[in-house]
Structures are given as structure tokens and as C-alpha cells.
Length: 412
Length: 224
Image (cartoon, rainbow over all chains, first blue to last red; front, side, top):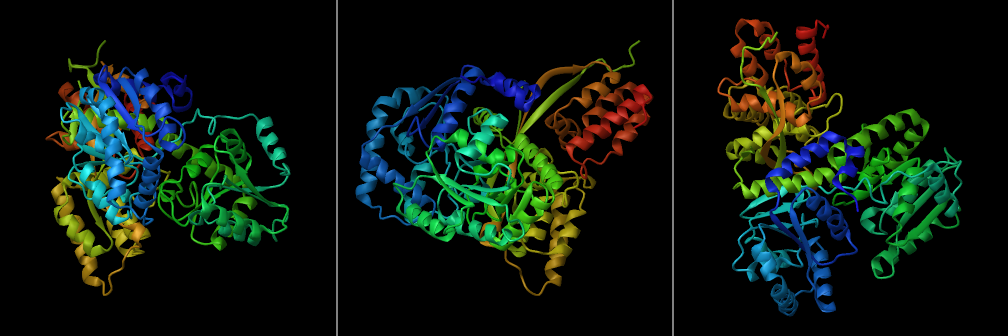
């Protein structure tokens, strides 16, 4: 298991020292994280890392998961989509299942939750638990990992009633925050530099991935890693590639994403991408399994140009991942990509395939500049978007809630 | 021989900033003006100074969030330039800074015939911050030790002792001067040099270099 000290090699010893100092007043406090799964999905991935690190810093941390029937998870999947703006046919019957599942889970969790000093409820699935723990003694914080910038209003109006009772909430970006009667902390997501997706790889491993997917390791590679989703604009990436190809005939394009078996729209988008790619042997459309972390890592490290040409984006962790590997990113001028891609410094922000093509040509022609931008990109991630920063913010929020949340907290 | 007549050691602290959405946003200049009238002063502080604790590039184009938003989201270069030159350190308090911001924006509104709207996902979100200060357990016993201590200080420590201190102390002074002043005339020259360091238009990395050079020049005779 990874310990807090393991991160010192990446962040520097001083960052770890500061974490220990910040955690000192929190030693022994009872913290419970609640979400809906131990495996799969971004939240479980974050908690798998955060919980042991918080324990390592001396906090008494538990991670609990709520359980439910398949119907419950279908409903909460619809919640997830609806909160991101996709209307869903949700009515009283769905809400009844949602609340009943919450009540069933509260039976087993109540004593743990009521006894905790701090409870973090992740995403909407476990939200009703607060109401079901009337003798709670600690502070309850709702951590929303979802892009809530334009929620489907009928659903949000329903869920807001649960959220309002919390002591505070946490959103990833200011754009996602909502009018609520309590403090709303802002905490951008982060990547784990020691995970399979981000750890250092040998040259052989990177080279091997290129060979495995039929890429010519001696020719330039343009890469976008993302789901096959219209908002990620894979067709725009193919167009950008075609605009560059005449001037760089050796160019290869890789579009790498997950499988599309349970998502009809993704299947349709994938079919469109394949059709657009036609018979061009230099366009590689890869469907990777969800656990292909090392493969994605190798592709990002092996790419000459990394794009994330999204038309709409929450935060864009694939941007963070590529930047951590020292790659300048050509990103869509939207959402959280703007927080990461500082135009002309850590990459380029673009609005069209033409813009993406122009910047691709520029970076291919100026490898020295690409290298310098990649260096800045990596530093930006080191300073702002690593797991240790997330950990520091969780500790700070716990301290803020324990000390009554004045504007300034001076620890002894 | 000790050169410090101040019996108290310098307590090195560090800080972490928590960003808090205050639930107000602006899509055009009028909305920004209206919110500026009554947003908490902590939010104005955050949008001027909070950027320092974020990673900065060598020469950031704009030093405060207002100027940056006006330039990139409203495409108003003239106002961006006027806002960017406002130096928050030059104001006696945050209320005066608020009034200056309002004055500059009002003037621009008077000159403008058409109000420009930012795109829906480019609104200005007013953010405030909560500061958590903690003791690093490091102590500086003698002024000479400032050279090495400052050269190793984290961005958070520098922010706390050199920038945040001005907001904390009634004298609006950084902690280094406050610590050196009880030593009498001995460090008067150093204190006036410290007073002339402008922390607003540099990054914390540059600030660390400037302060280290200044202390090195004073205590080791090394040219800064």
C-alpha cells in the first residue's frame, strides 16, 4: 500500500511535512467517507488513495459504501446524467426507491455515522443518510464530483432539499456551485502521480505500446484519449488531423477510448468516427478496457501531440494526465481545460478543428518550444493538481469545520 | 556574538487557502459593478492576492482576476489595462480598494455604449477564501539566519509573512520588519529596503529570490 512518504519523491519533502503539520490537530478524529461503490468510477478511485493516506496522517478514517438493488443504481445513474443537464423521466416512484434505499442503508450505518466527527457524503446516492441520523454529532459535508453547472431543474430542486441540510458542500469548480445556504468549498480534482496511469514508465514499455497497436514508433503521433462522446469532438480531431496531414505526411492519429457496449450514443459516435476515418491506415481508433491504465499512460508518454478538443468539459483529467507527462495540450476552450491549459504557456486553447490543426503544425515544427511548454505544463500539475493538494484541502476543510469556519484559523 | 536584541525568535508559519464560492456571478460589466458594491471584502482580497498561491508563469499578463476576466471574457483591452495597474498594496484598506475598482469600472461604463456579455461558461464567479495558518515548528533565532531560512521558505510561508502580514498588523507591515524593528537602528536600512519590495507584481518564487538576495546582501555582503 502506498504511504504518504512515498509521495515525497514527487512533491518534495516539504509538501509532506506541511501535510503532517496540518494533520496534527486532527489526529484521532473520526472521519467517515460514504459513496456507492468500492470499485469502478472516479470517486472510488480517489477514495482508494485518499482513505489510506488520511489514515497514515493519524486520522481515524472509515470508508463505507451504500448498497441497493439494481433499480436503485439505474435511478441514480439517471440522477447522474440529469444533474449534468440531460433531462430524465424521474418521478415519485423513482424518488421512493431512492429514499427507501437510503433508509435501508441507514440501519447498518447509523451508529457509525452518528458517532463520526466528520462525514463526507460523495455524490447524490447516499445524500438522504443525513436525515436518517438524527443524533449525529459531527459535521456533514456533501462532496459533489459532478458537473452541476446546468442541472435538470426538476431533479436538482428535489435533491437540493437534502443538500441544504448539510453543514457545507464541495464542488470541483466555481461554475458547478449552486445557490445553497451553507459554505461551498471549491476543490478541483487531482491525479495520483504514483498510479498506474501516471507513474513513470520505461522507454521499452512506451515503445512496446506503440508496436502493440500497430503504430510506427519513428513517425509523429497525435493522440486524444477520451470516451466516444460528441462533447469530446472526436470528429473534430479527425478533421484537424486531415488538415495537418498534407504538410506532415508521416503523421499518425490515435483516438483511444473505452468500450461502447452499454452506451448507445457512444456506439453511434464510434461508428461515425470509424466512417470518417475510412480506409486511412494512419488513423487508429482504439477501444480499450476500463483497466488499461498502463496502456493509456504509455500512449500519452509516446505521443508527440496530445489533444483534448472538447466542446464541453467538466474538468478534463486526461488533460492533467498528459501535462503531468510533460506534454503541452491542445485543448478545447471550455470548462476546466481553461484552468489547466494556459494559452501559449502549457498548451493552446482552440475552438475549431482549424485551430487545433494550426497548433499541431506549430508544435511539430518547433519541438524545442513543445519541450519547454511541456515542462511548464508538468510544473503546473505538480503545484496544483496532484493528489497531495487534494489531501491538503480535505484536511483544511476538516479543520475549518472543526474550528467553526471563521475567515482565518490560526492553529497552535 | 548575537546580533539580535529581540529576545523572541521568529516563528515560521505556513498557510493553506481554501477557496469558497460565494454564490455570485457576473456576465457583464454592470453585473460585476453591482456585485462589487456589496461582496465581502475577503472576495476582493482573494481576487487580487489569491492568485499568488496558484502557480504563476514568469510574466503573468494580468495580476488580478478582474483584469483577466475583462480582457479574455469581455474582450475589453482598455479596461483590462486600467484594472491591471491597480496595486492593492497601495491602498490603506480593502474598502478603499473596492472604491477604486468601482471608480474604474464606472468610468468605463460611462464610456461604453454597448454592454458586452460573456459567454455562458465564461462568467465571473466571485470567490472568497479562508486561510488556515499553522506553525511549522521552525524558528529563526538570529537575523543572520534569515538568509538561509527565507531561501527555503514555502510559498505559503512567504505569503503569510510578507503579504498576509500587512493585512494582520495595524502597522500594515510584513513580519520580517516587525521582528527586526525592536533591534533599534541596527536594521533600519534593511527595514527600508524590505519596505520597498513590491510583492504584487512578482511571483512568490521571485519574491523569495528578491528577499533572499536582500538578506544575503545585508548579512553576507553578497550583492543582490
